[in-house]
Image (cartoon, rainbow, N blue to C red):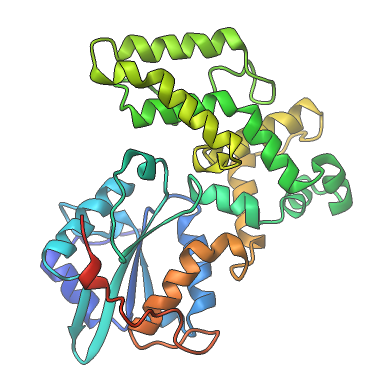
Length: 329
């Protein structure tokens, strides 16, 4: 398969002007983003020709790559050039960037713009485990009746709460390390180092060892004295039942797989992590609450650019709200 040619930035923007799409939706591009965000957009908009999903790999030379950092650089270019909204060839179009929240809100590093939308929870996987049918997904993967899968899982909401609690200490440690910018600490990129196995409770000695490691890496840094208060802050996040703001949704998969193996349920199922996410994404109804973080913004932008959403009407367009007027870095 021939690789797609990379266009310089101006030529890339020109190609967007000439396309039929009224809304260019930039996403981080990792699985399952393309499928999920296209699913929500297709449900909101009457025609899939009216929007375009763009991943970091499709950006012009000098900006393409992987992940949020590439998109932030490209967003900054569009903002500085005042190209977040375009009027050309008799067409009004706009750009919208969709990011995983991670802990950007707690680091105060969010892009504050009507042209940027973040997941409500840590990442899109959190939303899929909330909105998808997990018992149905398990039944399909394991080739068993859904009723049997439901018995194994129990209440999906309760399972999510208990799973987040199981890795509470690790989530708190990872959030603390990220917010305090601990150099060289592999937190969110790793599975829990304080739980002896993914499906067993944390070991207090391992928890203390990780906290000591963070303090050692911060020795001499101004943030050293903030470690204990930051840990307490994120334990408070859990106490307020806001745990999925710092619990990484991708961890659900690792814990679930270990639980199923420990219970002798999984057998020889291959590629479980990718398959469970794919089935959850397929079963998630884009009209439900899990998708509202993006759905409402899409309705607003489709109305702004003169498109009618599938639900009819003009979406949620505050009369005093104009994207260009509220853009800030």
